[in-house]
Length: 326
Image (spheres, rainbow, N blue to C red):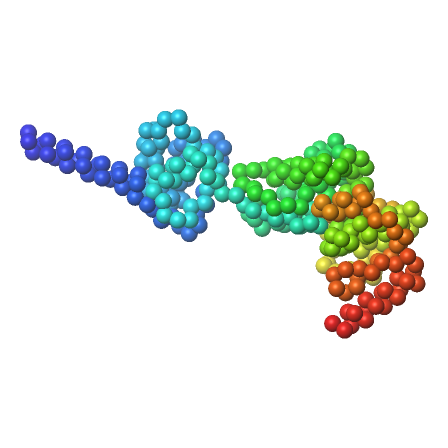
C-alpha cells in the first residue's frame, strides 16, 4: 500500500514537472518564424498551427492551458516569433493581439503600378491582384470623383502598417481614407478629379516642393491659351497603362496614341497619372501667379522657367551645357 502511494506521488511529481516544462520552459523557434492565424480559427486549429511552426512543444498542453483560463480570447493575426519564449508567453501574446505589422512606404508620385509592386514586395499579396482592386474599386472615391476610372491619384503617399489578415481592398481603402483626410485639411472639395490630375502631373515633374506652385502655373497658363501640356510623365503613364513602357522615353514615344499622352491630345489627361502628395495638391489648388509657359531642368534638381519660346530655348541650351560639364 505504501509502495503504491509512493509510486502515485512520484507519478504526480513527474507529471507536474513535465507540465511545468511544457508551460514555462522557453523554446527557441525557427529563425523569424511567422504564424498566420486567420479569423475563425478554432483553439484546436491555433494550437496545431503553433506546434507545426515549432513555436510551442505541445498543442495538448496549449489547449489545457487555454481551458484553465477564464475570460480570455485568442486574437487572429500574424505573429512573428523571433526569440525564445515559453508556451505561456506565446499564449499571452496571442491574447494581447500583439500582431506583426508590415510597414509599406508609398512615396509621393508613385503610380498605382508602383504601389502594387510595393505591396507584393512586402509579402501582402500579388501585384496583379492589387491592380485589379485599384482598377475596379472606384466606388471608394465615387462621391468625390465620380468620373474616376481607377484609384490612381487617390492612393495617398504615406507609410502604412498593414497585416496579412487584411484584404487588398482594405489596404486600398486605408490609402483612400488618408487621401480624404488630407483633402479635407487642404480644403479640396470641388473639381476633385481635375485638381488631383493636375497635382499628379506637377508631382511627377518636380521633386522640389517650392517649385510646384510655379510648375502648376505653367500648366494652367498653357490650358488657358489652348497650348498642349506636352508633359513627358503623361506619355510614360500612357505606356504604363498599355504595358508598353520600356523604362525610358524616345522621340517616337511622343506620338503614342493615348488620351493620356498630352503631346497628342490637348488639355488634361482623363485622370491622374500618379498619386500626389499634399504639397502637389496645394500647388494645383493655389498655383503661382506667373506668365511662364515653359520650364526645363537646370541640371541641379530644379528648373528654369520661361515666358517665351526664345527664352526657353536659351534655358535648354544652358541645361545641355550644364549636363555636358558633369
